[in-house]
Image (cartoon, rainbow, N blue to C red; front, side, top):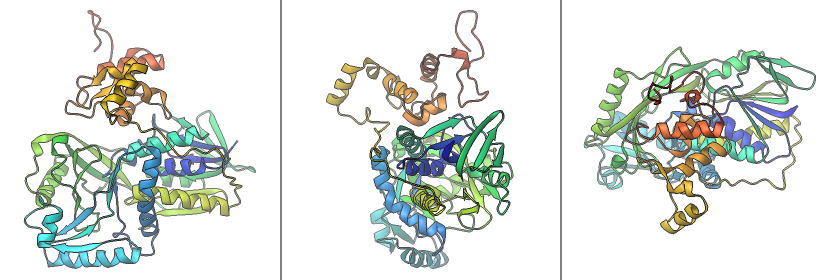
Amino acid sequence: MYKVAIIGAGVIGAMIARELSKYDIGVCILEKENDVAMGTTRANSAIVHAGFDAIPGSLKARFNVRGSNLMEKVAGELGVKYKKNGSLVIGFNDSDRAVLQELFERGNRNGVKDLELICGERLREIEPNISKSAICALYAPTGAIICPYELTIAAVGNAMDNGADLKLGYEVEKIKKTACGYELISGEKKICAEYVINAAGLHSDKIAAMAGDTSFTITPRRGEYILLDKECGNLIRKTVFRTPSEMGKGILVTPTVDGNLLLGPTSENIDDKEDRSTTAEGFSKIIGEARGNIKEIPLNKAITSFCGLRAVGNTGDFIINSPACGFINVAGIESPGLTSAPAIAEYVVEMLRDMGADLIEKKDFNPHRKPMHYFREASIEEKNEIIKKDRAFGKIICRCEEVTEGEILEALRTNPKARDLDGVKRRTRAQMGRCQGGFCSPHIVRLIARELGIKYEEVTKSGGESKINLRKTKGGERI
């Protein structure tokens, strides 16, 4: 019997689990996929928003600004790359200028620091490669960038290292209220918990309905992206947005913490919560608007494209409530959900305390985690010392991203442990370079098979039936 069960191991569930692992209680995270960060978290804009967009007084406004203020400290403790690069919302006409004025006033009411309305020389001083058509902008120096799936992996790992349990491949199919709390049932398996936190993202309305709450619905909103090679990462310094509309903040152009350039997302409401397909229409929109934002974007340097789904609730705000005793919804966490995650975690803990949960702080809680990329960022002298202790760090597996065998083995051995190719990718960046895994994948498959004690042919790309190799050829090679 756990004190708290969290359904969903995206960034929201991860940050709540980490916050709860500070206390002497039993915490369990339930995730239906083969790894954490497999929903909205794995494919979004990776922006830490300043907080000027949300309506004053809303949960979005409250948690965005608080989360933005917390994020640098959280990222530092978890060893996650974070860069306060600032953001620009650019305008092209007097109508846009009026919207930017409104955002400026809204941001001030929300408590965002150092906002500035700029134009002309000041705009191009801050961002030299901005479009010639842009005449004004809202500048937010507190805007930042981060890696959402690395943050989630690190937060879950830190929670596990402090005593939390993670159960992957656990899809909650039924919820039963009991005298002691709840039973969360998946096939023949059953987890019992006194309190349940519904952080199931796109499927949070389905989970809420299992507990008797049908007060909200979640609509998936498709967002397509194009990622450019690292040699394009210095094209701009700031995150550049267009003036927002009802469907979102438009096509942005931003550097990433890993040095790439990211374009997107599109914004289209769809019905299928599993449809992450990309489209020619989506790419056309991205390319057209991105070229309008920034001068001379080298689109011939694109190395991959992808699509994410945002969980849009029907209330216009985050849905954080308790419809039944001991059951908490944390749903409809669309943008600025990533930014808000640390603040939402604090709030949920206070909700539990108000419900009567006995939360006694651990004396031995350790908030720190070794960075996943410590070896790559080490000096030559430090690398040589690491290699002396473990020769696996002297063997390069992924040439594009310069990832060693030692780093891949650590990803397979460190909480939460990678179990497939994509899991290794998210932890190490192996397969994320120009060749997109064309050369290194067979070597990584071999390491996964060896570490998991399974056949080479049983290794998957992302769990389930996503097997990579079918059988051996006559010559002994695998296809």
